[in-house]
Length: 270
Image 1 (spheres, helix red, strand yellow):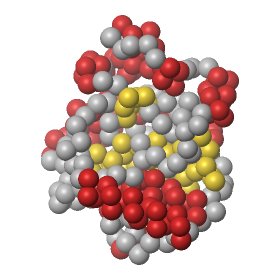
Image 2: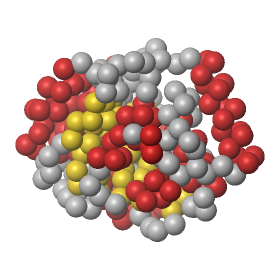
Image 3: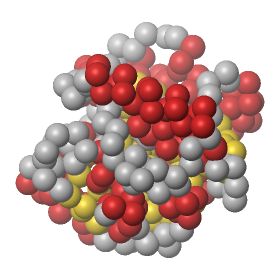
């Protein structure tokens, strides 16, 4: 097995269906999927069961009770369940292009983690995307998106299919090479070395906090936002808590200032 894909989700079964369909048509097949489920209802399990026979390796469903936003905790549990030494993290609202997994494997390198992005779609187009649009890869085509009403802007360049242009854009983009929970990958041992995700943190930069500790521990990162492509389906964020976001920011500032690598509220508590 070449890698484990950890997909976080919470009561978004319509979007998860589209995401899993995207992984079912990948050019690279030798991977496992682990669903890190932060307390969804049985509707999510039904989606997973539907796709269970469509992959080379069985889908693992890692679930805990819904006690509020505990994404970091369920991600740590998913890491412990993973079978591969290389882990790709994404969200259950990000549909991957067919070369998504292949690209992460192509760019992986000891001493680095990979930093990808997404192309955000409005709700109208998110709803419009059908199974056929994913299977045929239409939802990644600029011409198709324009026909659905998407306005032309520079961000459309993220969807380039030209690998030379993508490499050039990865090189010149001013976007930081941070750990982005919707599209990042790294070696399992590097993540375990800093005790995984910080379970004290709720929504608001909790993924980047882990990446910053990876940096503090000597890792570098590669920018692949124009190479590893996924489209982000729109949704509400009722879980956003300004006080928690502020707390997360303070933790990150402290960690950066003090070069913190290991946290006590991490994966070893699982």
